[in-house]
Length: 256
Ligand SMILES: [Zn+2]
Image (cartoon, rainbow, N blue to C red; front, side, top):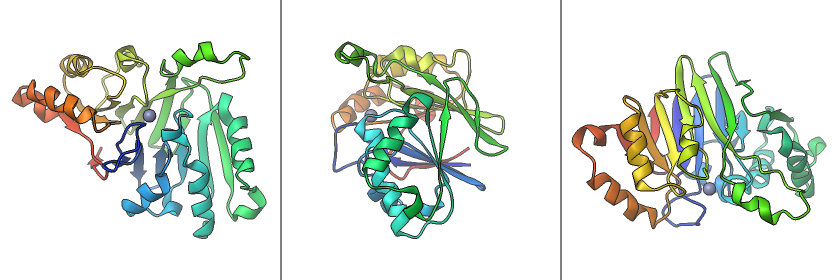
């Protein structure tokens, strides 16, 4: 299986990076993780055909992870898509996504392909193929907004993911509330840990690198300012550690 970083930027729009998004590709399935502002152009830049994507999973509803979804679906329609598209999203958000797409004048009967909404619960295993599946857990990224939701109308669902491909685990932090979210999956020792770095400190990255003995760490969700923070991190690492940690860039592809 291959993982391609379609975008590696933070929530701050940048000329250097598209907003964070990943594409998991195995022979039978292509899964896009997050579809923020600019996702269609980011996919074009990486020469990914819109219609080769079988499913999209949305981690949470911040615009840098979600607001390109309706535009991407429109591009799929325009380019003559016929194959089904699965949208994986936490159960609490399914209704809202349906309304959002409807309000974007996306009508099922005009699309030319079927949109399947696959709602999931946290900790529920979602199987994509016989070899690829994922579970999600609620993280604390959106917790600080709760006090502002006076009418209690919002869902604060925000996921971190543990993907399983054959016997290998891949942890994707999604956007986090802080370092504790890096340990959501307890003792699991993933082969690859893909973590965002905008909401944690350098010291937290160092700690996880040192406690996480064998796996590789890939850093993403990087603002222009974060690049300075990363330079400091890399200057403090020894040779062995440097081999296990990589800064993602748009287009980086790894094989699992
Ligand atoms: Zn973000």
